[in-house]
Amino acid sequence: MQTPEHILGNTPLSTFLAEYWQQKPLLIRSAIKHYVSPISADEMAGLACEEEVESRIILERDGDHPWQCLHGPFAESVFAELPATHWTLLLQSLNLHIPAFADLLERFRFIPNWRVDDVMVSYAAPGGSVGPHTDNYDVFLLQAQGKRRWEISTRAVADEDFIPDLGLKVLTSFEAEQGWVLEAGDMLYLPPGVIHHGVAVDDVDSGDCITVSIGFRAPSLTELAGALLDEVLAQDSISLASDQGERFYQDPQLPLQENPGEITQQALAKIKQMVLQELQRRLEDSDWFGKFITHTPEAFTSVVDETDFDAAVCLEPFKAGVPLVRNEAAKPAYFITDQAAQDRPAAIHFFINGRVGHYPLTMLPLIQLVCNQRHPPPAELSAALTDAMAEELLARLIYEGFFEYLDDEDDSF
Image 1 (cartoon, rainbow, N blue to C red):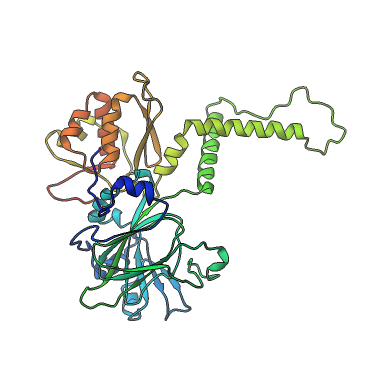
Image 2 (tube, rainbow, N blue to C red):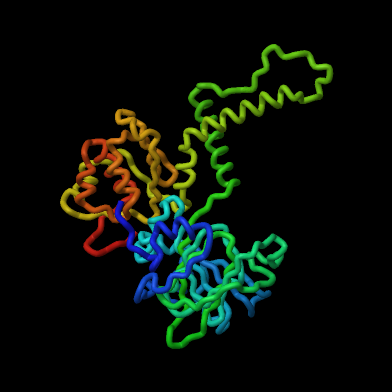
């Protein structure tokens, strides 16, 4: 795997993972020296008017009530009507729309890919913020332009500490333990649960306040349980459709009950055993998790006509020297069931956007390349195409839009 460019200043990656990740905050001065924001405030406003970009405006004051949240897409006239201070524009998943933010994510690959959520970018007018709040996920806050003062607190919070009926998780009161002013290129890492409050500093010399948030997904127990149960229900439907039958509750040699209205402890024990055995079987398979964690609402909507698929045709540009780039909306991952199972045809479980395929270990070099690197080196990719199976997999990834050919310096999705 390619070593990511260091982005944590004087803190080694191993030290960060052992002592800071999910444990305590870390301030990194000049994480990216001479950083220049890939996007301006005006360009952000333009994107907020687009249907495909998720956008919000947070008004601390001058709205219908304090801390009002407006959801886009917005008409251009909205921005002309905003107050001069104390508001924030938030744009989600800009890594899907701006290649520079997709490339920025590549510098955070010391965290497993499946934990990556998205890149959110915020513009804040002077004094603008989204209020003191906490998140349930890890985040790196990179200052892209201007200055923002961040204050944090590690005290525990409860539901009653937030302003009720607001639609935003803003604390009723906040007392800072630490604070810093971040300038372009500085970065602050925050683990889950740390209270943080970022306010744009009114500084004419440093320009508009733009902050990039690199968020990392932390699936909840509810999400995981729902995904597992969805898989159980889906497989039951498949079993019924294929006429293989479905396992039903059974109670041969049923004893005569004096009270037929009672659900006996023996019946409950059978039900519990039946459910736990099935859940355990699904958990050991683990395909459900791979499909869940790689599923994305930004799924490909183009209709793929299988009759037009030709692996050789798909690979012609690559073999002629045209490099490939992974579509930022593609979410690949894999796990290996048995490193020693050289002859096992399904040793590797390869997932992409909620789908799964099973491959032998001979496919590992190719699968690692397409999962680990957005720009797989052509020489390494060619070396990984060792047989027809490998060529067909790469060709299908191209045919279905997960990988695209780069036209000179064009890096669009």
